[in-house]
Image (cartoon, rainbow, N blue to C red; front, side, top):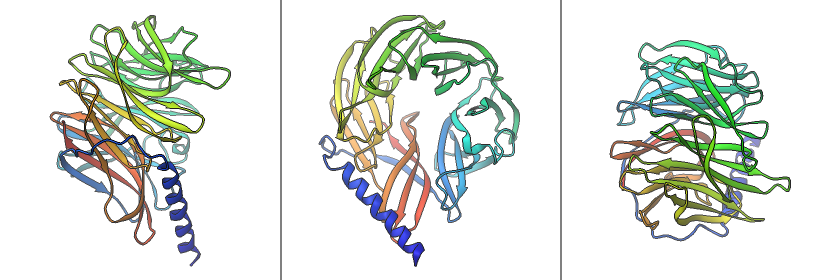
Length: 392
């Protein structure tokens, strides 16, 4: 009886939060749904699945999932690497928890920085913890963790916000340390090749970046001043960390994406005392804005966002709406919202978007995600999904 009452209380609280978040609603747009190719859900009666990171090798998605016993949404996790084909079938499950330092006692304090496909045909995984940053080289074809070693030489207290790859497949880390933006490069063995701080008083931490063919970077970051005000920082930077050109504007967080056709865009949040909005901005080669479009607004929810620049000039954006559902929209070369969709689970009492990514795959886009759902019987589950849909 008490167990059911606790579940009911959880559901009512979740519903109340969802309603509060939607009080002002989202910026109204006509809904023109994307064509969904496949929608696969992985769930278990005994385990909770939390999405961490993904990368493509050939047509298959390799995704890292954190697994906990059912009913535990925090605490230690076991890391598993899954191989999922284009039809949503799980082809392989590699338990990485057996490899130090990913043993069960340490994963409680670890944070997955990113999963990348290496030039040597293996997969690379970067994980941070109180002990520092660790690199794993995984031979996914033989299910063997080839190496596990600390990344030596990074500044003390380094934080990695994003793992990138340059034009040659090199591993690039962007983040911060001690209130300064940090840019670092690793080889396929996880050894530090170079690192530099971005010497700019308007930058506190880097949040995302893009490696360009000319070996420069477009980096996105934040500056937090003494009053607590956050400013978005956008710059083109040399491989040595020298700022070549920059701009700054009101905002926080943010991600960036560039297509092979050199069309770049960013999505970031602007937060007031009680309100919030998400903005997509297309930028030219000088980083100047081409257009801006507000895609969501409402009460202060600070939802994360993902962005994908398409070769046809379209910008695809995904994030949580005011009701914490997955929202995906496509903006034209002129900044008009030409297609959008809210993805909702059928036959559930409540749902909340957790972690997710937005990835390109030939003529489709793929969204691996975790969401928390409460079913008709007030049973709570953390489930992992892989959505595939046609690009607009």
